Length: 184
Image (cartoon, rainbow, N blue to C red; front, side):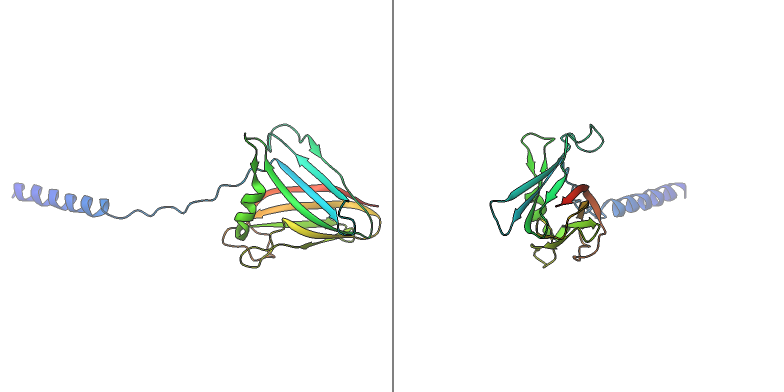
């Protein structure tokens, strides 16, 4: 009796081990690594005078948490003007320097810039580019200034995989910068 109990117990444990070891394990979904953005350039081209090109820059070469940014320009625009705004992103903490703009454009369905203007009467920003779903990205925009005033233009890049709808600000923040802005 003892021998048959040992055989039965061994067979039972062997069966359980075989059954559980053959179970297919789920592969976790591949996560898209967040981009390290050390440099943001905002280029404003005056629609009435294409030779009037203004570039304003934020640069923090070692990324967040290290040394203070070495460049954080004040945006200065003319009153009652319309500009084409292009946003350019770099990771200068690696060699060679990585162009993050292309990555954001290629992953357009997962990214969107948001622009917060304070006071709201300072200027307006309208998206001029879209992803493959027709939702805005914000690498290309149209900016219209109003009367002379000062305030801030906050530029926010959100990473929104599987949740982007063109208006929701949910998702991970890749970068958020508040530029002092003067219109005169």
